[in-house]
Image (cartoon, rainbow, N blue to C red; front, side):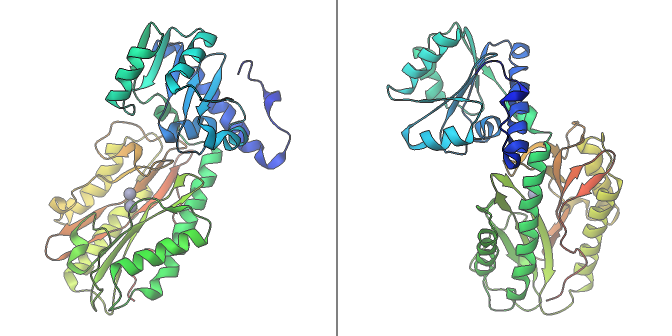
Length: 376
Ligand code: ZN
Ligand code: ZN
């Protein structure tokens, strides 16, 4: 579409924030075309077309130029696309996607078309290269992702809801964690509750790792039965209207853990709390990571913290910015996790994870579940 102006906003109050956000995102991507040496961009990655257009279907191509915003999808999604993507001209393809794209290319006068090289398959690229009538098909990386890195208010609100649902699921499931219950049952309890509270589902494969399995940083829930004395690492999240949450708590079943486990728990907790306390807007991911890493190293467990401190979360469960070895500064509006852990093979492990949004100066912690040791 052409001539985007404020008057394009609908007057229906509740949708206004969303529409304003969509308009701003579209204007931002349009302003990036020239810098990337293209006069049109083809967007095919789902999270990216969702972000730019509002359309939540499983398949679409967006073609964006300075004066046009076109959403191509198939017959299944006609009505949905028209409702969800107010600033896009909807094209239902009937003649095959390449013929449709060529018509659009002609209509919009596109000569250099950018595409998402991290997403488009090699075969699809060869197909487009052969069939599309453009001077140049230019591979582009992280163009939409670079916009997604700073969340707008609309996104932060959705993320807050996804975090709240996960917090509630955690308190809901605690009474079910007891000897004789399998890790999978606990995972099912979390996931059931997420849907009950309006979430679309789990934001990734739920981790419930009990006993010695807790030393596996990615111990997806198994048939193992929880035993008396087990530590249980619960790492899970919800998806709410496309946006993810991610949290981890480690709880203990039956009794207080042994002195070594208690020391590990307290070390992870101190590292996590200090990172939250000392992180500042503008610090790099690496600097924030090292706050927690130094504390864990100081306690003698440096070799047992084998992953980065955190990662960005949004439409994807893992996205930029990374809070590990990255030199990227964490700026206002970026949403990341802070999740130190200590893992000892054959013994067990502890991880504690919250989500934050960086504020004017300090992080705002989104996750609300308690972090003091829980003995069930
Ligand atoms: Zn997690
Ligand atoms: Zn995480």
